[in-house]
Image (tube, rainbow, N blue to C red):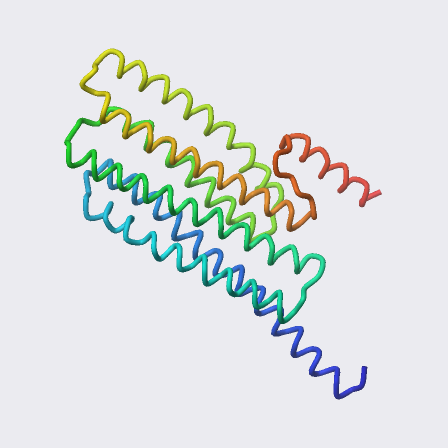
Length: 246
């Protein structure tokens, strides 16, 4: 490389780094929005706030637009830079992550729509405690998965992936409780079914948060860990780290 080519190469490399950082920043913005969507959808039910529920439904379009915009950025990076190795994994991980975030936004919209129906019927508050607890749990998972992406923290990513089992357990327990309540009082069937759909949406949010964590492991370690036992994945990662130290 000539001396005149070297500054140009450094400039291109700096531009590329800036583009990758912008991708991560935009992904975090989208993640913060969908986490707030879930929080607001839940709060709209607990506080009987129809205006807030309607805002969540309206904001779903904004979530969709953010996904399209970030995907377009990823496509341009792939076309212009033809990244390899870790850089390529970052772009692919961002693309996959936007899909899961968009689906979290969809689930938040479903929760808000059910909240509007329940508020309109004024059907009591049975199941609200379960909705609040599981919502807090899955929102924490979304937040931690995004933090693991920002800091490339595989330990935190593994923690999030493990928590998905806890959410599933909480969901099953809540469903059993609600089924019992429905059998005891047939008048509660309709509102309880709405609560069940909300809990199902929250359980799906947990699944998507776990997916986000798996993308971090893929990005950092180059391992596709989808559909694998998370404890086995953790052991494999530790074995690899120990081998590098030796």
